[in-house]
Length: 134
Image (cartoon, rainbow, N blue to C red; front, side, top):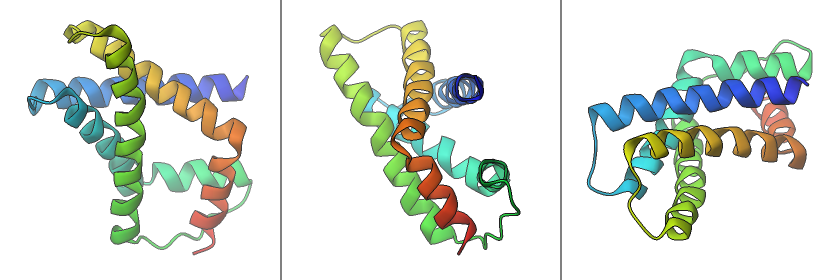
């Protein structure tokens, strides 16, 4: 049940980021928009301390993370790519440019499904162990 609640929250956070980006900095490329949303989502979570709280909660212990801007930027680029790939596949499946409301739904689903996938594959666990032991 916890996984679904977390995924719902991540989906809402992705929806918020998509609303913020698409209404503030709309670029001509929808794929670039997807990358920027993924990048910004991860970057702001790192800067704000969400990662640290999440990992401490996940591992059940204090997280002794030392902030590293370079590593956060690299991770955020990776997250941006991870957002752009399924977004591109969804665009190709639809064969057309989608309207704004569909974009918001797509970003909510991408954020939620990536979170569920990373949990099932154990990627979040590895991230948190590495993140908290720096």
